[in-house]
Amino acid sequence: MAPTAQAAPSGNVAALQVALRAVNTYSGAIDGSRGPMTKRAVRRFQRRKRLTVDGVPGPRTRRALGRRGRPRLGSRAMRHGNRGWDVAALQFGLRRRGFGSGSIDGGFGPATEAAVIRLQRARGLGADGIAGPATLRGLRRGGEAPEAGAAAFRARLHSCAR
Image 1 (tube, rainbow, N blue to C red):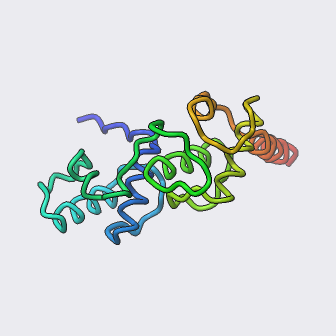
Image 2 (cartoon, rainbow, N blue to C red):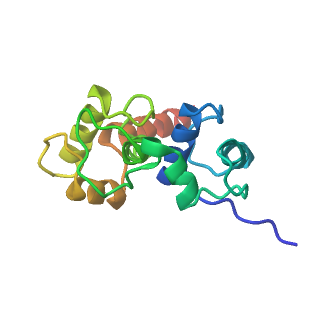
């Protein structure tokens, strides 16, 4: 039997990990990977809430997470002071693209706002610190932060010089 491919890290899985950590069922890294620790934490949470224990974070499980299980990424413009699933997914996406936003905790604070502004400037968007539809498109469009790309280039240059 061929090994199954590991799914790419996901902002939604990272948001799930943040929510599960907040309810003390997950203690692993916020890495966006739906590995065994994440699956165990989902089942533990479902058991605690007397839901069907299937390890799948479906609508009932998300509802049981309360405010930590919503809103979905893209359902609102996010700004300083917002909290939730969407903010955690945004923070994960910012970090993956090299726009570090501090901790991935689901809270849109000063570090997340600064990261959003850096992304907006790098993508030629109006830099207002609000993550609305255009900013999310810019994040999905890809490409690293200019400083992340420069650091990678310097590292490659340094390794070639040896």
